[in-house]
Length: 278
Image (cartoon, rainbow, N blue to C red):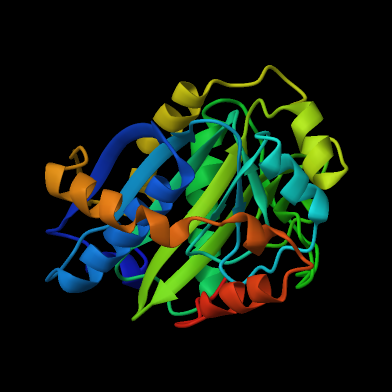
């Protein structure tokens, strides 16, 4: 098998696998952003891959997304929903009962579509180990869509029936890439309908566990970086400290969720500095 040019420089480096963590939304986002920052400040860094679960029900908003749904605010105030802002772009994603991946890529292809294609090839190969067929979506990008899973572009993956299975979004910074992806496994049908007004994705066959999906994708990651060695390195004490200090940067308060509050629109706009692609 030929080795892509963007992968050849990976030889001699060590990729980092971080054991799966369960936690709150702001801490997850702060950790992903910290890993990207570390990638930029490290000489000859390797890629980083981690999977995680969400404690409670969380709605993550894309970096550029302005909430326009007052019933989201009601769900937040009633304690049914928590909201967090992602560093990556895209539409809103409902977490809980699924598995999220974060991939930090220090030397990605220059074109974001090619980066999506490479990552999709990895995910497709991994989930094929669980007898799950996936294909890139073919919907046009909808800039005004509030729900990430309302459409499936070439950045996303669908099953043979055309149902979206995995939604992904990117954040580029100084030539380095953070890519997020969500794999809904057993989301709450009631909450999904309350948030988006639609039914959640459902699996045609038996739903795989988060542990099986994580194992399959971890085994397949070598196909994205042929020859790269991977090592398991848990979250360090210093990383835990920095994440605790920065988690509040990704919190979304009631005023930001309310579409009728002009200050909310100002607060959301402040997130748009250093525009990511995705």
